[in-house]
Amino acid sequence: MSFASLGLIDPIARTLETLEYKNPTPVQAQAIPAVLAGRDVMAAAQTGTGKTAGFALPLLQRLVMEGTPLASNTARALVLVPTRELAEQVHTSFQTYGAGLPLRTMVAYGGVSINPQMMRLRKGVDLLVATPGRLLDLHRQNALKFNATQMLVLDEADRMLDLGFSRELDQVLAALPKKRQTLLFSATFSDPIRALAAKLLVDPLSIETAPRNTTVKAIRQWAVPVDKKRKPELFLHLLKKHGWGQVLAFAKTRKGVDELVALLEAKRIAVDAIHGDKPQPARLRALERFKAGEVKVLVATDVAARGLDIDDLPVVVNVDLPIVAEDYVHRTGRTGRAGASGEAVSLVCADEVQQLAAIEMLTKQTLKRVEESGFEPDHRVPETNASGQIVKKPKKPKKPKEARGEQRVVTEDVRFRR
Ligand code: AMP
Image (cartoon, rainbow, N blue to C red; front, side, top):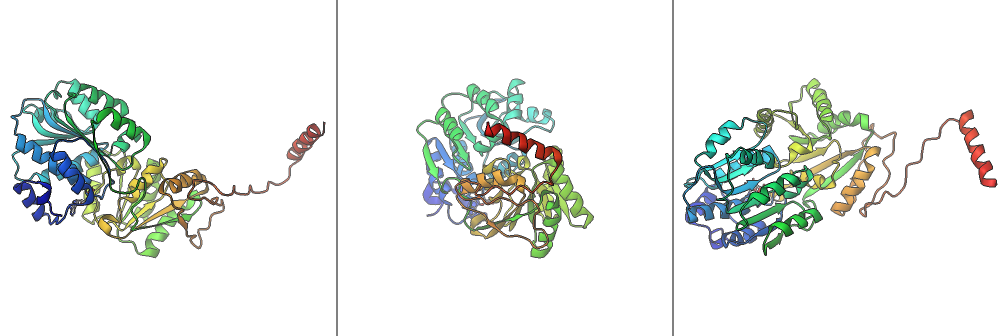
């Protein structure tokens, strides 16, 4: 199947030729004709499936073909995304796919000055990519009215809910015109997502390109049991042992990120970090340096992780397991793209067994465990299985007998015998 057969106009088809996109991906093949026909769409598609072009191409075409003049302080199409990085990335995709089209686009997110965004909105825009919080700020300050908005995209909707944006979303949705086209993209169709879809979409085309909640098969996934305090050291050991080129590493907290960065820096390994406390320009710079190959290890927290578009990344290391099991799917989605093989390694300590079980249940697989010689944990990680069960509880280390402890046992025995 070719892009032309999906009904895309010449200027867009030519841009795709320049980009060397030969054939549409499955999500594109289904979404593009439906969006062009004006239908609502609900698509379960992870990063790496080509979902961005799946909504961006037909949206750009509709905006050009309808050619409505711009009214000041309005946006004809709105794309809502959970993070600043994803906002930048999706906007860049719109610019790439829309090269040469007479459209005015912009991106808006928090953490940077609102004034330039307000200035740009004065003339109105065809398309605005934004994070929910900043979008509402612009709306409250009358810099953005929603009356001319005809199209709405929620990208990575599951992540928006995970990040606690559901109130903001409700407020935006309440202010938007009822008559509009709405597209919802989400890595997974969880129950809250289905509930959101039921509120938002009218007779949507439902697209599920990958089986529900499965990680991409080409990725080799394994886990290394280790004690918590030895994780940074083990990371360094694995990095050297496997000769990994570039690694995206995930830590749970900012402290964990800083610890790993400090260790790698001490070993003169080119490293940078992305976490929520870092100012936006520094986060973007870190990402650019990583993409350009200047940085060997990029350490990130989940909040910052969504939407990192890095092609051909061979290795993702979960230095800490994510709290939310779905984030495991998002994290590993950074590797093994477009059929390339990838590796996702999780360093797992005994405290994380519940998270491990939740991940295995979600992805319907038991992660293969590979012990690393010299790093065998003192605190054993209990066995788990793909049904999300923890098979055996770890044996409690025997406590040295103390007079007080014995006393308590005796008392209980006595009570029992009564
Ligand atoms: P996405 O899932 O939207 O994050 O896209 C993943 C990557 O696939 C991006 O780097 C796109 O540039 C690329 N891509 C999207 N569609 C196609 C296509 N039809 N052919 C080749 N590459 C594509």
